Image (cartoon, rainbow over all chains, first blue to last red; front, side):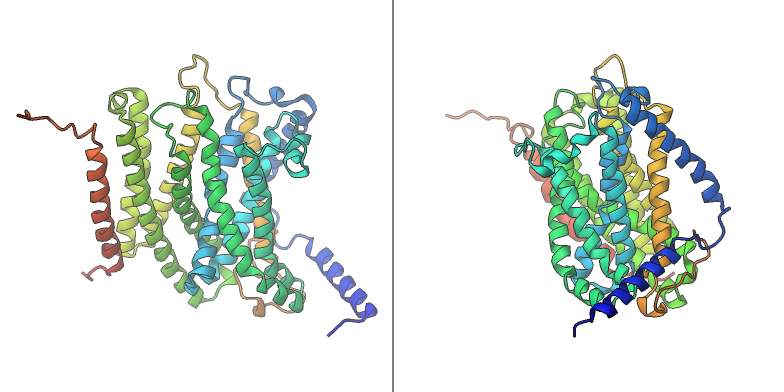
Length: 414
Length: 41
């Protein structure tokens, strides 16, 4: 059935009016999170203005010796690993058919999408000539042999894929049922494409460090970094889904009925089981690489102790915690394990990209306070956008629960 | 007559093979352990 031009214009007007009405804040503005995040974001915007006018050196401790700091080490390298939950969960639900996890797919995809938009987007902040970011896309000096070329294309394509995966929720929010059905039919293809892209660029981020062999401490450098990055992104993503899901279910609890709350605990335990098994595999990979490289003599040094803290303290210990939580069906312990595992990922990525990078250099890099504020700005802005979308669109709640045109029912809203 | 030769487990990558075999065994045990529900106290 086709729509007449007059009907189409009326529909466009209705959608526009609805979107404008949704822009206004809904709920209290003076919440603890807002009071903390708003000043940080405003300060961050000011620092970024200085950075783009006067250059990287004006606000960062980066140098020719240390061209990559926490904007790359945390925002990009760690942020993308944290976003791994989207490709893992969409594979589990749409390809393996485990419908049990369907209720959390949209929130996870949204989290992944925003993580890529903000964390991978933060890459632009770190480029000395940010306007050149378009070069890999428009074909100006294609670097076919460069890992960065692969990563940049993958980031862009994966963001588009995740937008497509999330688009049915936007169509439902706008009350466009026919468009929703069309977008829904594209989901499976988008998921398969997205999983392929993710597996390649999660390992590709690790491959970026292969060229830095003389700079990375031998305990962290291995030619298997890409595989380690890929495997760790699986349990990192699952841990992030556990943490983010827990917070979302508390903050937006009024969007869920009692049955969904009960179902959520069972889902968390299933995710914990997946995380435990993947961490076990990752731990053995680390052990195998260590035996293969034969670096026994390095364990006696301070770097060796730091390495053991990462591998034993932040991989083996949370793995055991995950196993124990699944066996005892303790969701509290599961959350502790998830936070611990995420800390381990953060430590691993920072060790490779910042801490154990240029380890022999007499001068070491420490982030400036401006770099830390900008990192917090990126994180807080992502949370603001996430909250704005969850409050308005059918992310946690079912679409049929919404009246046409949508309405917000959440308490913690803006 | 051949004399006794000491096989270095590091040189032959024997340790890596042993680790892989232990991994495979432990992996099966772990998956079974996580799949069976814990006994109620």
